[in-house]
Length: 329
Image 1: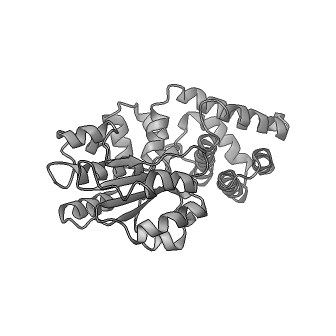
Image 2 (image 1 turned 135 degrees about the vertical axis):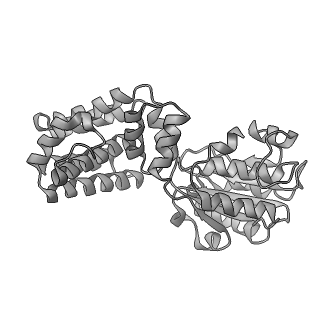
Image 3 (image 1 turned 180 degrees about the vertical axis):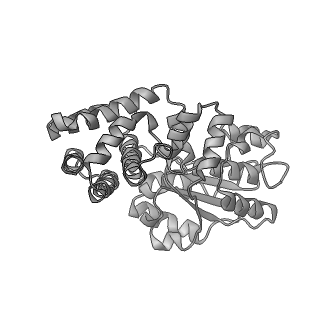
């Protein structure tokens, strides 16, 4: 079953959903909480397919008419909520696609399922508008709210939903999948796993990127030339890179893994545990130059920069502060 096999980890979530389907104890509202790339959308799709499957098992058969429609995203009773504004799901989006539609009975399946991706982007007004539907849903309605940050939902919404948390998947599970299923070389799989920190989607994206080596070289070039560049030049260089194929978060994650390598080498003086073993000379040089306290400060600064950018703090200011910390430590 090709689709089902793509789900890596999340055993507790899968077990809960299978039991709900098998025992006919499906909740009307769920929150799937986990970072982007953690598998929320895939599991939401598979759960919706299971509920609509004509075989009525605890997973989709992938053979019936309902499953085939769902796989092609043209099942009339599995509705994916879209939104025009990239950073906001407004009250009109929710009213038109969900609230006014939910009163219409299912066309073919036993359920009418609404999948709201990036549900944390709903405005307060949109969340309040949905509250009444969640409080008094029709018997056939199932609403799946996929969120990257569960804390942004109104407590009145969260308290009426079953929340399923998508935890990081074990490194060895992801590495095995990358090597055996995607035929990624050992070293690239190892780097991808370290980079992804338990996020399957992120690991796949990096492992299968054709320009993986070029991305690393470009990111590390800024670090290596840092002493000869002005801070604003470093900011301009990373901004230029992040405006191309990969996001700033991917570059920051690379820096995070690299500086963790430096810290590990400083503590152990061993090359075996390093992710970026090919960077040995530069890692050793940095470990000799920086203190433990300085390296920990840099790692914290990278995490802080990621959080600030996610909160829409000014890009240039955020990266200036980060590169200053890297240079001073």
